[in-house]
Amino acid sequence: MNNGALNTLVSERPVLSVLNLKQQFGDGCPACQGGDDDAVLEKNYCPQCGTVFALRGVSLDLHESEILGIVGESGSGKSTLMSCLYFDQPASGGQVFLRDFEDAATNVLGVSSQAKRQIRNYRLGMVYQNPMLGLRMNISAVSNIAEKLISAGSRHVGRIEGRAAGLLEHVNIPRFRMKDPPRTFSGGMQQRVQIAKALSNNPPILLLDEVTTGLDLSVQANVLDLVKTLQRELKISMLIVSHDLAVIRMLADRAMVMLNGRVVEAGLTDQILEDPQHPYTQQLVHSLL
Image (cartoon, rainbow, N blue to C red):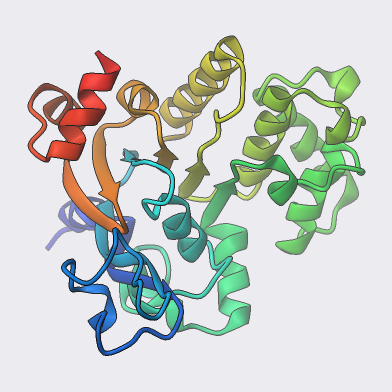
């Protein structure tokens, strides 16, 4: 096989594969049987033992330069999925493979804490719904990005400052505000600083969790336009979570609909919008019209 064909084959492989990911809060009991018996559960909650099955066998593939949108109501498991993928909490079961980590041969959920830090530093970027989870509010915007670069091994002060300033400029933070702490910024500006920080080490995958929730409509539009522009310019793969199907419609090439910890429908975004199959998806689409 020549190099061109080999490169094409590699690029067609998913950059991220998630297989049967599970997350439960509680030990479970014989009645709830690991969260698989819908007759026993109330949504994703076992009334007998109090266990919550936040993720019930979620699988997905994310491809190169693709935006995959995940939509669902509060409590559907969307944010738990992102938290498990970014190692903010350990998953109860399943497998996650990254194309750029050991050639997708190793389940990253089982690697060492040092390897997970390396993945967070170089292969994944995360933008949280609550900027306080992604930023230190009392140090400057430049310092927030510098901190991320230093944790990944950068030591040259001039290059660190130049990279941080360049990223902030790229996400439309004025130069005269770059030395200000994020606590003095608007919600939209805080999200843009988070995005700049997440991109600091050129990760191939960006995770965005409800990045427009709580923002004014005009600010939402600016943040969404920035996300789309960055994806087009950087060819980065993105996993975007939202409870708002309008956000997914604007950004995502493909969409997944989650309900009670499960994926109930998946496909091309246009296909899901035009011909939803699951009753819950039909309800979401109807509310959008």
